[in-house]
Amino acid sequence: MTDIAAIARQKPVQAALASFTSQLDEIIDLIIQVQQIPAPTFAEGQRAHFVAQQFATAGLVDVQEDDLHNVYGRFPGTNSHLPPVILSAHTDTVFPQETDLTIRQENGSIYGPGIGDNSTGVAGLITLAKSLWAHGLHPAADLWFVANVGEEGMGDLRGMRAVVQRFGSNGRYIVVEGGIFGFVCHQAIGVRRFRLDFQAPGGHSWGSFGRTSAIHVMSHLIAAIDQIKVPESPRTTYNVGVVQGGQSINSIAQSASLWLDLRSEDVIALQALETQVRQLAADLQVRFPEAAVTFTLVGDRPAGSIPRDALLVTWAEAALRQVGREKIEYFAGSTDTNIPLSQGIPGVCVGLARSANVHRLDEYLDPSDLPAGLGQLLLLTLAASGM
Image (cartoon, rainbow, N blue to C red; front, side, top):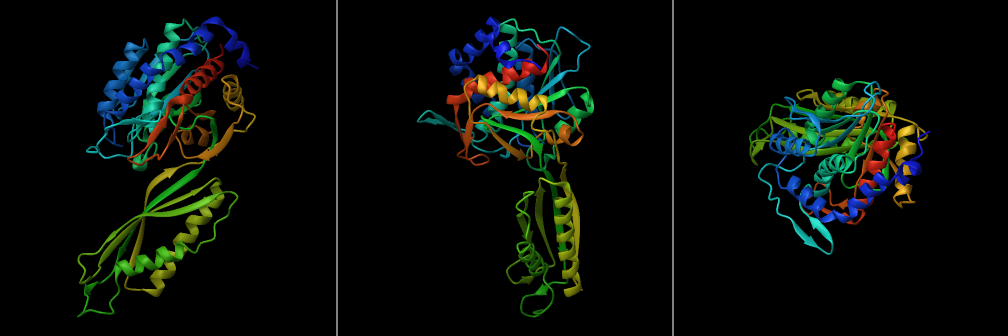
């Protein structure tokens, strides 16, 4: 098996690892440059153009942007017959186009929407490419750097679906998230998302009192969902994240809708939860025959995993220890790795630094672990590429 410690002892690798500390201010500036470009899901084009320029400047070849605004760039390996390594970081954020992206720095941390998730991941890819060229590191397999769209919200991993369709099972996938340094994700949870639409006769709040209200029926279903007992293991969750409906305060609602998120570490448990929710909705239609409830699937993130002793996981662990991180944590999550893992393709997700308040306007990044996070990514990449 590839020896991470042996890789780390090579002088060019040692120089690259040291550069992540000596060039930390420059790397942070790059993170901020990425963060300052709005990139809500489905509108990642401006950030994609910036990344494409950075990929070309970093020395990558075959740089191109597809119709979705995924950006690709290749670092040539020494053996074109080896399966490639695909390094990806998502460009999209949860914040609308008009969000104030002003940053502030306080007590060593950097505050700003999307600063960790995933401006740091995108900047990390660019930094890694620059470092490989600067220090004359020559992996055996081709490295494909990919800044992909559609990881957040309703993007439904559309960017990574296109990436995996392009490269298929002939490769290893390393997904980079900015703010989860010290964590290794090799298990993808399944996620099913629905919009439920409710229709009812409605009417005037006084003159038609007693008629079925779409909002009231919806409320009954939300309350019933809240009573579902889900297993702690495999961990399974539900959430009603958005509710809408009604015409006015003095109208009995004719229409309403909710957005429902169902998750589980286990495919069977997720199917069972969905079946329960559908049965609750069917029971309500018996109770309120004038009402109608329809389900529309709006997101489907498939589950999958590789074993803890798989090579990618073992290398990720060894790389973390090599850069001084003894405490290694594992988590099952919904990331771009869902797509390769669900197809039985090796994939792992790692982080570069620590962040908090993710998906909030006061999100912040603590860059103190950034050199170590980039070091882990470098060592993992070189191991995966057969150096």
